Length: 130
Image (cartoon, rainbow, N blue to C red; front, side):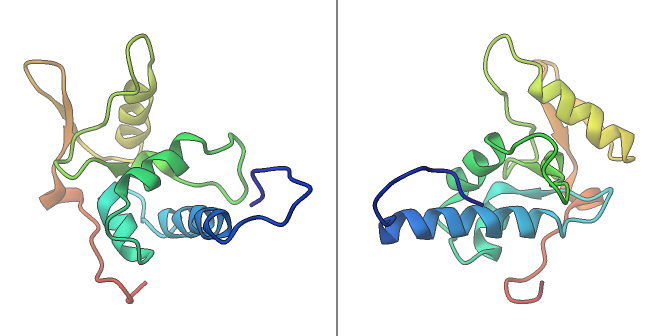
């Protein structure tokens, strides 16, 4: 996946970042329907255990219609909550709708937070096994 235009050769750090984006997408594609995992676990699986935010950013900038599809909605926070997309956005509700369409129960708390039960729907394979 190429995300920049430059007349110069990309720096090593840029190549690592963009290679990692492809790894994020490839790994998220492995999450089975009716299962969810965390941003941090995807980071561990791609060999970047301290970069859960990078996983979130890669999914945030996912291009609609990416082929093969990337089931971004199957990745939630480490507490099982669906992360807010900011005021005035409906991304969290869209994620809930996508998960429920697959049969994943999403509980809504008193303050409106949406949470998935990892004990029922968690997908946490050991690094190196997928």
